[in-house]
Length: 326
Image (cartoon, rainbow, N blue to C red; front, side):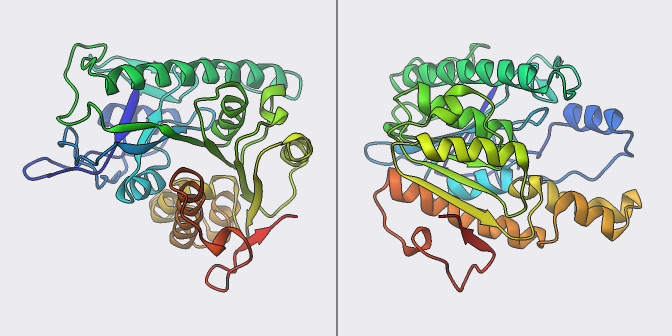
């Protein structure tokens, strides 16, 4: 399953999409022994016609974290689409927490619980499978762009999607294992122009192998032995442009929607502030979302649109939370 986010020509009469489908939301609540929660809706409108742009729009792929799902970074994905990108978020089947297919059936995660003994082996296999998913999605996007306009359920795409992709300007970003997937795919597939890894440990030889194409490492400013070892290895091997940014006060999930939602849900769940800070970081969730949006947009604008900004060259007084690793 993929989801395509894009600037719309009109949304009149089209309802907003939920952040998770009702079936996925119920499955999540049951798996985590949560009460029924008032899950948010998005700013997106399913099936809206595409607002056309001469030559097509630059395309970004999003890869979720282990046992995540394709809408986990909606705040960032919507923002990128609002700035003129087409964003294709991927659900990695049997890796994602749960996926609802068009006929209503669910596929859940099939990866065993990770331990110190199996973590590297299982995660490496998962990342390799995700890179294969990425190649497949890129193949299908090329076909859609040329007018092969039916999906696996034989449904037509939204009006105007044909020719909407500028596949010469193609980037990818991901959170956690999605960041590792991004780095590996950038190494393996020359169709990708640039990538961004959001706090993901680089598990595979391809991920640490680097490439001639730019990759952003964007993570917490707290040390993490496994993550930092992989990032150091990548840094030494990367041949193309590279940038390593840190976000002060961030937790691992500060780069996706989790902190925003957790702080809203904490009173309903009876979670004390110290537990929330441990899980969501000490940085305010809205501020984290704002800063991540600004820097990810600036990064892809530089390499897919050739737009210069000094945000990526030096610290900014507007965003003192951002640090540069030399």
